[in-house]
Amino acid sequence: NAGVTQTPKFRVLKTGQSMTLLCAQDMNHEYMYWYRQDPGMGLRLIHYSVGEGTTAKGEVPDGYNVSRLKKQNFLLGLESAAPSQTSVYFCASNPASVSTDTQYFGPGTRLTVL
Amino acid sequence: AQKITQTQPGMFVQEKEAVTLDCTYDTSDPSYGLFWYKQPSSGEMIFLIYQGSYDQQNATEGRYSLNFQKARKSANLVISASQLGDSAMYFCAMRVTGTASKLTFGTGTRLQVTL
Image (cartoon, each protein chain N blue to C red):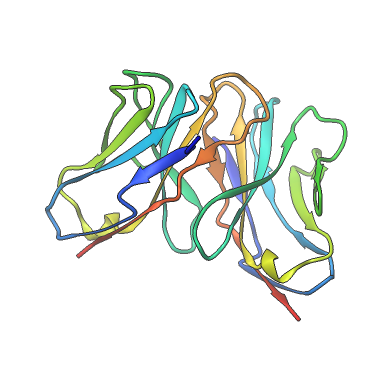
């Protein structure tokens, strides 16, 4: 099992450009999440999904869109990148059942917006 | 709303000594879980330990233990016999039952283990 994978690992954008970050998990998890991590701060939730075809806003959703067309994939889109979106982005997944299971994190994507 | 507070931005500990990383939390929900993650310089998030709000005993995982004091709303991580490889950022996080397992994170503590 690959677990949670993220594509790309690094990206540099110019202000106003768009891009999509791909998250894939092979654990058949219902729940998936996108977080961002900024220096001196913990991870903050951008958007999440509780199943195929569903999405919901997290703590910091502005400037991002997401889609979950397939259960195993969760896409994060930036339509018009801004320097404030320079961050490390983490995807995570979780089984739906209430348990002690931790969230399974991807390796992260480091995004720089110039 | 849930909140996690980690008041120690940085900590130093000598190799082989024990260290406690502080975490306090705030929630009005009775059912929740508390997590600790390690983030080494390579950047990945590594799950260390979990404590459920109804667990009677403090959680332990090898050299890691969680000092859970429910009345004080604290969930401190204790690392025994520190090793150089323990140098990393440590994050405390909380999940409230029934909220799609969303995690709320603290701002982290950077631990440096010295010789």
